[in-house]
Length: 307
Image 1 (cartoon, rainbow, N blue to C red):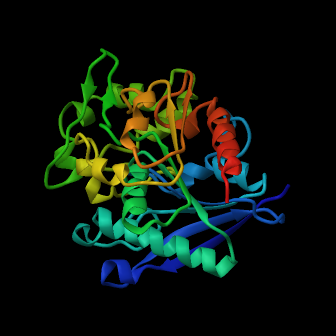
Image 2: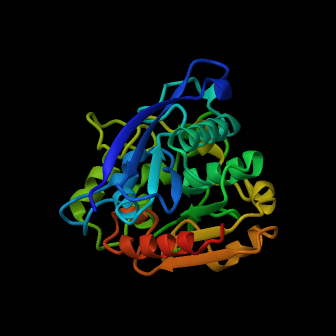
């Protein structure tokens, strides 16, 4: 089934208090929409993360995977990142970014005449998703991929964990081992079977300050400012505890969650929690040769939800 891509600029000025828009790509096929999904990438990444294709990977990216099976799949660049309007960090905090995504999602739903939306967030996008659902109740269900509502941290090859947080900027917060030794990110982000050229393109962009020019299409020049706090224990624990819709937790075998099975306790108000851990997959799920397993589980979960 062929998939079309429509590029949108969605006005979110009301969330910022200044002129601003989000860049959104809507993927859909000709069939009637079974599910409307709205997805946000992780910190330092663009909506291209959900459209990642490469000769070393099997088939198209995640957005096309779901759209070719009957979904409308919208992906956005977060406020101030990627192709979205650049805004000062002071105007792009967690609440403003979540509000902007809420406005974009609801506008697209109304414009296309779609039903309730399923929210998807990877990594820092998962943190934003939890806050957004608690604050605005945008979605009928949420999928938190590669983020812990308990404590997100970076596993290292020598069996330690890194979780720096706090600082006046992302670069300041993540200074030291996390940014000085890319072997730590290499271990956390990519399993050994990920194509070397993909790993090189991903990690040579610079972290957390992007130095490559040009950048790969999945990399954003900037990070949302709240990335400086994403590794703090329980940074959105209060918000997660208030979520009362179905929750899907997706993780790789080696990821930023200490124990994916323990995540259910972070969502006590939800009566429907699904956990999927993909073997031989690290944090950057969509780079993995096994990424299709996660997509299959996510797709089946969303289609099993009651109206």
